[in-house]
Amino acid sequence: MLPRMRRVVSLTFPLALLASLLALPLGPASAAEVNAGYQPFLSYAPFFIAIDNGYFTEAGLTVKAERFISAQKMMAPAATGQLDVLGGAVSAGFFNAFATGLDMKIVADKGKLSKGNGYLLLAVRKDLYDSGEVRSVKDLAGRTIYNNAPFTSGEYLLYHILTSNGVPYDHNKVKYMDIPKMVQGMQTKAVDAGIFVDPWGTRAEEMGVGKILVTGDQTPGTLDFTSAFFIYTGKFIRERRDDAQKWMNAYQKGVKFYIDKGKQSDEVATVMNKWTKLEPDLIKKSIHAGFTYDSMPNIKSVMAMQEWLVKTGNVQKMVPEDQLFDLSFLKAAGKK
Image 1 (cartoon, one colour):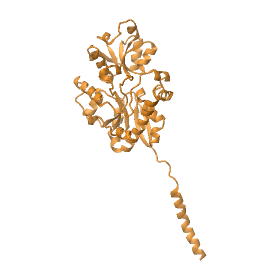
Image 2: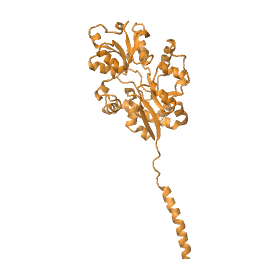
Image 3: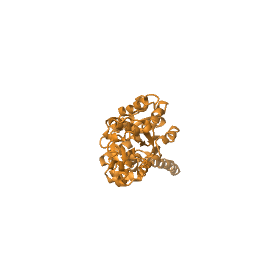
Image 4: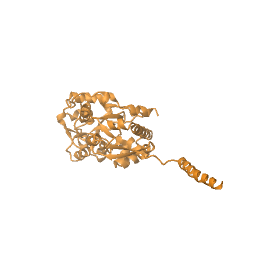
């Protein structure tokens, strides 16, 4: 009997060991990687906060953020699958790309020209203002005004600023230059006026070379205008919808933190300093983009700019809303 009992024990021991091993907790699942393109602008604040506060990590994502000098430079890597998410702004090139079948969708607002948040603005040279030569928009008639690129949201703002003040808009009187170089141009008196994205308008004032004349929220035609947004590639939406939803849920946490804390908070300034290299004091003084808790873009404002671009002959045809937007991720995030 004894030998038989030993055989039973020797057979049951491995089964007990296996059961105990199966009961052990498994290690954490590897986080899904999401590649996102960004620019070091203040309007990316909630995105930067979501990264630094660990909201994407909590959602089970590893976000690889890649810096680009312009939204246009993000398009090629997005089209080839190297980017899943990217920041963008309305422009003629953007609408024309959608008209020719760009496989992407606008999924969230990334900054509005809302009341108190006119971060796109018109500034003039300080010596022209001080001398009384340029004290109002009317005094800019016939002068060359600079913008960063043709037929962007900045030029749309300029059109509204000029025409609402009785000054004809003349595209031939608009020249193009990188915004930091426009500040230098004011120093050398080569630039009379320009459309700036803050903090560069505030920077020009601090340097004593510029004077903010009109902010984007002071012009009826652009009040509550969604000038920038986040975009998902079609592939990301179709093949990784769960990850796309997780990204949006985490981003929305960043938006809430940013709104609740405010741009004057040390927490926001510290994060923005890390990502933009701007001084915390300048970040706090600057005019920021407007955000809402739901991050819903103002579709009507985007379509109005597209209409203007079609009328000026810079966009081939109107692209319908459903071809531009997919707001299902935002709506689902709002239900959490």
